Amino acid sequence: MSEKANIGVVGLAVMGSNLARNLASRAGNRVAIYNRSADKTQLLTKEHPEANFLASETIDDFVANLTKPRTAIIMVQAGAGTDAVIEQLAERFEPGDIIVDGGNALYTDTMRREKEVSAKGIHFVGAGISGGEEGALKGPSIMPGGTKEAYKTLGPILESIAAVVAGEPCVTHIGSDGAGHFVKMIHNGIEYADMQLIAESYDLLRQSGGFSPKEIADIFTEWNKGELESYLIEITAEVLKQTDAKTGKPFVDIVVDAAGSKGTGVWTVQTSLNLGVPVSGIAEAVFARSLSSQTEQRQGKPELPAQNQTWNITDKELFVESVRKALYASKIIAYAQGFDAIRAGAKEFGWEINLGEVAKIWRGGCIIRAQFLNRITDAYRSKPNLLSLLFDDYFLKAIDDSVAAWREVVAMAALTGIPAPAFASSLSYYDGLRAERLPAALVQGQRDFFGAHTYKRVDQPGTFHTRWSQDRSEVQTD
Ligand code: 6PG
Image (cartoon, rainbow, N blue to C red; front, side, top):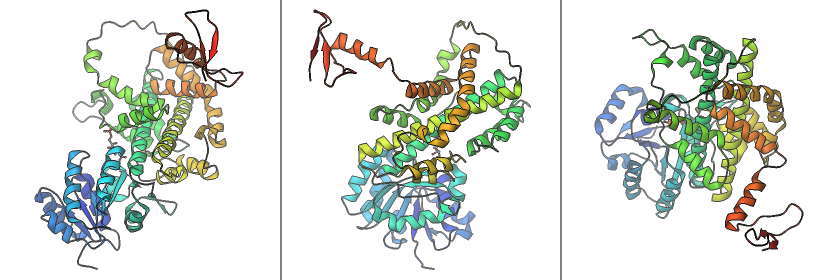
């Protein structure tokens, strides 16, 4: 084995350390490591002699420890720290070398950085890495952007550490410059929706169904054997099973009900708004976290009238099955919206993103890994230009099987006064897509009335305006 390293990792917090260990455990890799404070580098080297790391005290040592083309993965917290490390590396690297940002960077930052770094002939790859701490160590799902040329060197290294499903590594070259981080951002948006939908299911099962957290854990474990099988359902059951050691209460009851976030969900919604893509399920999940954290309003509320009704559940098994169906249908909507946003982003930024490949590399390693990603992969493989996931035969049938229960669950939540925003908005999105006529025609009329914003007619081409404040006659403006 060469004295030098074929790959380097900068930033040795948990994600960086685990990724470095993962890299080191794969045949053919020798890993150089560097951290701003040297004690972390020393500790990691000491704790993991088996990794045979090339520990670097300074950034100069680190760069000198790499074989050419030098390839370094930055694993520092997204933001100014990333820019600082990029600058240090770019000053020392040569044309043809590769800088990879493995953090959760905003794709527009990645596009800017790629422009700056590539001006020096150095490759810059923004790579989304999903799977949390364990994924980084054992096999994440990786979404690299950047040039095809950089991927030739980087691809095999990433393939060596990625999760593997059905013999295929969960990594693919997503597209140029910011495409990888864009897709990772949407992954996180879907993650928010998926988590919120599971949380709403729990809430309905507990409040309406009267099930205990432990019973709901069992229900989720059961669901995890079917079409809902996924990492998030699996870990939710684990969380619900947990008992607080101090109080003996269910863990879920001792945690403050204000959800945090680091921003990728908000980015997904902001970006999709700009692209004109209605990612309403994802947006509701982001809003639900915001509402939960509006502690002042929530604590300072007067007695807000409810006028809610009771809902008699006569068949508990049927009720559980209805919630399961509502969850499955809403989940399909979240994914359909997420894939729509990827398609729109690809169009806007000129990326050639293969949606089937994206679904394929999400089947393992990442937080949203789920059995039904196989179905999404199949759907886009057989019809790469599928307009919406909902138009695929498999998903059409899945919705057909669920829609009656879905309506019932949303109606029940509204009548009984239990918030289920992601369930409800997903159903509204679905009905909006189905509708033959939308009230948008009336909105166009309102816009034309107060702002002469014009409208199109259903029966002839052209653009029209009605002289509302005069004789209400119509003029053609275009
Ligand atoms: C992943 C996750 C990860 C993300 C966390 C925290 O794919 O491994 O998406 O990248 O940082 O899930 O996200 P929030 O703090 O915003 O919930």
